[in-house]
Length: 281
Image (cartoon, rainbow, N blue to C red; front, side, top):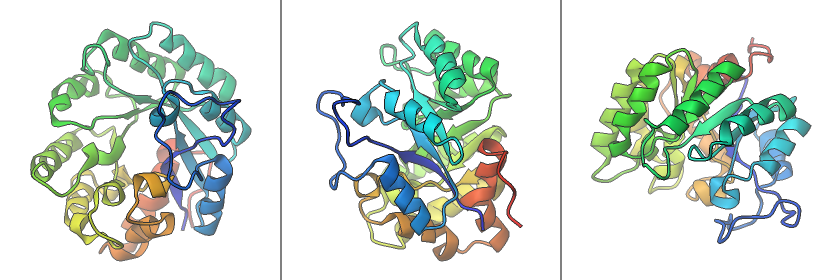
Protein backbone atom coordinates (compact mmCIF):
# COMPACT_ATOMS: atom_id res chain seq x y z
CA UNK A 1 0.00 0.00 0.00
CA UNK A 2 1.38 3.38 -1.02
CA UNK A 3 1.77 5.73 1.96
CA UNK A 4 2.32 9.48 1.61
CA UNK A 5 2.70 11.88 4.52
CA UNK A 6 0.89 15.03 3.40
CA UNK A 7 1.98 17.36 6.22
CA UNK A 8 5.26 17.24 8.13
CA UNK A 9 7.41 20.07 9.55
CA UNK A 10 11.19 20.14 9.36
CA UNK A 11 13.72 22.02 11.51
CA UNK A 12 17.46 22.09 10.94
CA UNK A 13 19.86 21.34 13.80
CA UNK A 14 22.19 23.94 12.23
CA UNK A 15 20.92 27.14 13.85
CA UNK A 16 23.84 29.20 12.58
CA UNK A 17 22.97 28.54 8.95
CA UNK A 18 19.19 28.50 9.49
CA UNK A 19 18.55 30.94 12.28
CA UNK A 20 15.29 30.54 14.25
CA UNK A 21 12.97 33.42 14.94
CA UNK A 22 12.82 34.95 18.41
CA UNK A 23 11.38 32.53 20.97
CA UNK A 24 10.83 29.62 18.57
CA UNK A 25 8.59 26.71 19.50
CA UNK A 26 11.03 23.84 19.90
CA UNK A 27 10.25 20.11 19.70
CA UNK A 28 10.79 18.57 23.16
CA UNK A 29 13.35 16.04 21.88
CA UNK A 30 14.84 18.34 19.25
CA UNK A 31 14.54 15.69 16.52
CA UNK A 32 12.84 17.38 13.59
CA UNK A 33 15.42 17.48 10.79
CA UNK A 34 15.02 16.07 7.30
CA UNK A 35 17.16 13.14 8.41
CA UNK A 36 14.95 12.50 11.44
CA UNK A 37 11.86 12.62 9.26
CA UNK A 38 13.41 10.25 6.74
CA UNK A 39 14.09 7.71 9.49
CA UNK A 40 10.45 7.82 10.59
CA UNK A 41 9.30 7.45 7.00
CA UNK A 42 11.50 4.43 6.37
CA UNK A 43 10.48 2.79 9.63
CA UNK A 44 6.81 3.12 8.67
CA UNK A 45 6.90 2.42 4.94
CA UNK A 46 6.21 6.01 3.84
CA UNK A 47 7.22 6.75 0.25
CA UNK A 48 6.89 10.53 -0.01
CA UNK A 49 6.20 13.59 2.13
CA UNK A 50 5.00 17.15 1.85
CA UNK A 51 7.26 19.35 4.00
CA UNK A 52 5.47 22.37 5.47
CA UNK A 53 7.23 25.61 6.38
CA UNK A 54 7.47 25.84 10.18
CA UNK A 55 6.12 29.26 11.09
CA UNK A 56 6.44 28.55 14.80
CA UNK A 57 10.20 28.09 14.42
CA UNK A 58 11.32 30.07 11.36
CA UNK A 59 8.53 32.53 10.73
CA UNK A 60 8.56 33.46 7.03
CA UNK A 61 12.21 32.46 6.51
CA UNK A 62 11.75 29.55 4.08
CA UNK A 63 15.44 28.83 3.44
CA UNK A 64 15.58 25.42 5.13
CA UNK A 65 12.32 24.38 3.49
CA UNK A 66 13.53 25.49 0.05
CA UNK A 67 16.98 23.91 0.36
CA UNK A 68 15.47 20.66 1.60
CA UNK A 69 12.85 20.52 -1.14
CA UNK A 70 15.50 21.08 -3.82
CA UNK A 71 17.88 18.48 -2.37
CA UNK A 72 15.19 15.80 -1.96
CA UNK A 73 12.97 16.22 -5.00
CA UNK A 74 12.56 12.48 -5.42
CA UNK A 75 10.48 12.09 -2.27
CA UNK A 76 9.73 15.55 -0.85
CA UNK A 77 7.37 18.30 -2.01
CA UNK A 78 7.93 21.69 -0.37
CA UNK A 79 5.08 23.85 0.94
CA UNK A 80 6.20 27.40 1.72
CA UNK A 81 4.47 30.00 3.89
CA UNK A 82 4.69 33.68 3.01
CA UNK A 83 3.42 36.91 4.55
CA UNK A 84 0.40 38.10 2.54
CA UNK A 85 0.96 41.63 3.85
CA UNK A 86 4.41 41.76 2.21
CA UNK A 87 4.20 42.95 -1.43
CA UNK A 88 7.36 40.96 -2.22
CA UNK A 89 5.71 37.63 -1.36
CA UNK A 90 4.29 36.81 -4.82
CA UNK A 91 7.75 37.28 -6.32
CA UNK A 92 9.30 35.06 -3.65
CA UNK A 93 6.71 32.38 -4.36
CA UNK A 94 7.63 32.42 -8.04
CA UNK A 95 11.31 32.18 -7.13
CA UNK A 96 10.77 29.28 -4.73
CA UNK A 97 8.76 27.39 -7.33
CA UNK A 98 11.17 27.95 -10.20
CA UNK A 99 14.52 27.73 -8.39
CA UNK A 100 13.78 25.21 -5.64
CA UNK A 101 10.87 23.17 -6.92
CA UNK A 102 8.49 24.25 -4.16
CA UNK A 103 5.07 22.96 -5.17
CA UNK A 104 2.59 24.61 -2.84
CA UNK A 105 1.76 27.67 -0.75
CA UNK A 106 0.42 27.40 2.77
CA UNK A 107 -2.00 30.32 2.87
CA UNK A 108 -2.64 32.25 6.07
CA UNK A 109 -5.02 35.19 6.64
CA UNK A 110 -3.68 38.71 6.41
CA UNK A 111 -2.04 39.33 9.80
CA UNK A 112 -2.83 43.03 9.60
CA UNK A 113 -6.46 42.71 8.55
CA UNK A 114 -7.30 39.29 10.03
CA UNK A 115 -9.05 37.97 6.93
CA UNK A 116 -8.47 35.70 3.95
CA UNK A 117 -10.50 38.00 1.72
CA UNK A 118 -7.63 40.43 1.28
CA UNK A 119 -5.67 41.80 -1.67
CA UNK A 120 -2.39 40.33 -0.42
CA UNK A 121 -3.86 36.86 0.03
CA UNK A 122 -5.51 37.06 -3.37
CA UNK A 123 -2.24 38.10 -5.02
CA UNK A 124 -0.59 34.97 -3.65
CA UNK A 125 -3.43 32.71 -4.79
CA UNK A 126 -3.23 34.25 -8.28
CA UNK A 127 0.50 33.52 -8.34
CA UNK A 128 -0.26 29.94 -7.33
CA UNK A 129 -2.63 29.68 -10.30
CA UNK A 130 -0.16 31.32 -12.70
CA UNK A 131 2.68 29.00 -11.64
CA UNK A 132 0.61 25.80 -11.67
CA UNK A 133 1.01 25.25 -7.91
CA UNK A 134 -1.45 24.22 -5.20
CA UNK A 135 -2.62 25.85 -1.96
CA UNK A 136 -2.96 24.61 1.61
CA UNK A 137 -5.38 26.83 3.53
CA UNK A 138 -4.57 27.41 7.20
CA UNK A 139 -8.18 27.93 8.27
CA UNK A 140 -8.31 27.28 12.00
CA UNK A 141 -11.12 29.40 13.45
CA UNK A 142 -14.86 29.58 12.91
CA UNK A 143 -14.83 33.34 12.47
CA UNK A 144 -12.48 32.93 9.49
CA UNK A 145 -14.78 30.62 7.52
CA UNK A 146 -16.73 33.39 5.80
CA UNK A 147 -13.65 35.12 4.39
CA UNK A 148 -12.10 31.78 3.41
CA UNK A 149 -15.17 30.83 1.38
CA UNK A 150 -14.77 33.97 -0.70
CA UNK A 151 -11.34 32.76 -1.80
CA UNK A 152 -12.62 29.24 -2.37
CA UNK A 153 -15.49 30.64 -4.47
CA UNK A 154 -13.15 32.68 -6.65
CA UNK A 155 -10.37 30.07 -7.11
CA UNK A 156 -12.32 26.90 -7.77
CA UNK A 157 -9.71 25.77 -10.30
CA UNK A 158 -7.00 25.43 -7.62
CA UNK A 159 -6.29 22.29 -5.62
CA UNK A 160 -6.62 23.29 -1.96
CA UNK A 161 -5.50 21.23 1.02
CA UNK A 162 -7.46 21.87 4.22
CA UNK A 163 -4.91 22.03 7.08
CA UNK A 164 -6.06 20.10 10.17
CA UNK A 165 -9.77 20.59 9.39
CA UNK A 166 -9.94 23.61 11.70
CA UNK A 167 -8.04 21.76 14.43
CA UNK A 168 -11.01 19.70 15.57
CA UNK A 169 -10.74 18.58 19.18
CA UNK A 170 -13.04 17.49 22.04
CA UNK A 171 -14.80 20.37 23.74
CA UNK A 172 -17.54 22.95 23.21
CA UNK A 173 -16.31 23.98 19.76
CA UNK A 174 -16.22 20.45 18.34
CA UNK A 175 -19.79 20.30 17.05
CA UNK A 176 -19.95 23.78 15.44
CA UNK A 177 -16.45 23.38 13.97
CA UNK A 178 -17.22 19.90 12.65
CA UNK A 179 -20.42 21.20 11.06
CA UNK A 180 -18.46 24.01 9.37
CA UNK A 181 -15.82 21.59 8.09
CA UNK A 182 -18.47 19.31 6.64
CA UNK A 183 -20.30 22.22 4.96
CA UNK A 184 -17.05 23.19 3.25
CA UNK A 185 -17.06 19.80 1.52
CA UNK A 186 -19.23 21.47 -1.13
CA UNK A 187 -16.00 22.81 -2.61
CA UNK A 188 -14.94 19.88 -4.76
CA UNK A 189 -11.37 21.18 -5.03
CA UNK A 190 -10.91 21.14 -1.22
CA UNK A 191 -9.04 18.16 0.29
CA UNK A 192 -9.32 17.41 4.00
CA UNK A 193 -6.23 16.61 6.05
CA UNK A 194 -7.70 14.24 8.63
CA UNK A 195 -4.74 14.51 11.01
CA UNK A 196 -6.75 16.22 13.75
CA UNK A 197 -7.17 12.89 15.52
CA UNK A 198 -3.52 13.07 16.49
CA UNK A 199 -3.33 16.81 17.15
CA UNK A 200 -6.61 17.13 19.05
CA UNK A 201 -7.04 13.92 21.02
CA UNK A 202 -7.07 13.76 24.81
CA UNK A 203 -6.27 10.05 24.80
CA UNK A 204 -3.54 7.60 23.92
CA UNK A 205 -3.68 5.37 20.85
CA UNK A 206 -6.12 4.72 19.20
CA UNK A 207 -7.50 8.16 20.19
CA UNK A 208 -11.10 7.03 20.01
CA UNK A 209 -12.45 10.36 21.26
CA UNK A 210 -12.15 11.75 17.71
CA UNK A 211 -12.99 8.69 15.62
CA UNK A 212 -16.61 9.70 15.12
CA UNK A 213 -15.66 13.21 14.00
CA UNK A 214 -13.08 11.83 11.60
CA UNK A 215 -15.53 9.37 10.07
CA UNK A 216 -18.04 12.19 9.56
CA UNK A 217 -15.42 14.26 7.73
CA UNK A 218 -14.47 11.28 5.57
CA UNK A 219 -18.15 10.69 4.79
CA UNK A 220 -18.65 14.36 3.84
CA UNK A 221 -15.61 14.64 1.56
CA UNK A 222 -15.26 11.04 0.47
CA UNK A 223 -11.97 9.17 0.95
CA UNK A 224 -10.94 10.36 -2.51
CA UNK A 225 -10.66 13.86 -0.99
CA UNK A 226 -9.11 12.96 2.38
CA UNK A 227 -5.41 12.56 3.22
CA UNK A 228 -3.42 11.31 6.17
CA UNK A 229 -0.61 13.41 7.60
CA UNK A 230 1.78 12.81 10.49
CA UNK A 231 2.23 16.42 11.70
CA UNK A 232 5.87 15.49 12.35
CA UNK A 233 7.64 16.18 14.72
CA UNK A 234 5.09 14.15 16.63
CA UNK A 235 6.46 14.79 20.12
CA UNK A 236 5.50 18.44 19.55
CA UNK A 237 2.28 18.31 17.51
CA UNK A 238 0.82 14.88 18.38
CA UNK A 239 2.25 14.31 21.88
CA UNK A 240 -0.22 11.54 22.80
CA UNK A 241 0.89 9.27 19.96
CA UNK A 242 3.92 8.36 17.87
CA UNK A 243 4.38 8.69 14.13
CA UNK A 244 3.63 5.01 13.66
CA UNK A 245 0.56 5.08 15.90
CA UNK A 246 -0.86 8.05 14.02
CA UNK A 247 -0.53 6.08 10.81
CA UNK A 248 -2.02 2.91 12.32
CA UNK A 249 -5.18 4.79 13.25
CA UNK A 250 -5.88 4.95 9.51
CA UNK A 251 -4.42 1.62 8.44
CA UNK A 252 -5.94 -0.43 11.28
CA UNK A 253 -8.00 1.28 13.99
CA UNK A 254 -10.67 3.21 12.09
CA UNK A 255 -13.47 1.04 10.63
CA UNK A 256 -12.70 1.82 7.00
CA UNK A 257 -13.00 -0.30 3.88
CA UNK A 258 -9.69 -1.33 2.33
CA UNK A 259 -10.16 0.93 -0.70
CA UNK A 260 -10.84 3.92 1.56
CA UNK A 261 -7.67 3.19 3.54
CA UNK A 262 -5.61 3.12 0.36
CA UNK A 263 -7.01 6.45 -0.78
CA UNK A 264 -6.56 8.24 2.55
CA UNK A 265 -3.03 7.08 3.36
CA UNK A 266 -1.59 7.49 -0.11
CA UNK A 267 -3.57 7.40 -3.32
CA UNK A 268 -5.40 10.70 -2.89
CA UNK A 269 -2.14 12.52 -2.10
CA UNK A 270 -0.39 10.79 -5.01
CA UNK A 271 -3.06 11.89 -7.45
CA UNK A 272 -3.11 15.57 -6.48
CA UNK A 273 0.45 16.23 -5.27
CA UNK A 274 2.71 13.42 -6.53
CA UNK A 275 1.41 12.45 -9.98
CA UNK A 276 4.91 11.31 -10.95
CA UNK A 277 4.66 8.38 -8.53
CA UNK A 278 3.12 5.13 -9.72
CA UNK A 279 -0.30 4.22 -8.42
CA UNK A 280 -0.39 1.33 -5.95
CA UNK A 281 -1.20 -2.03 -7.48
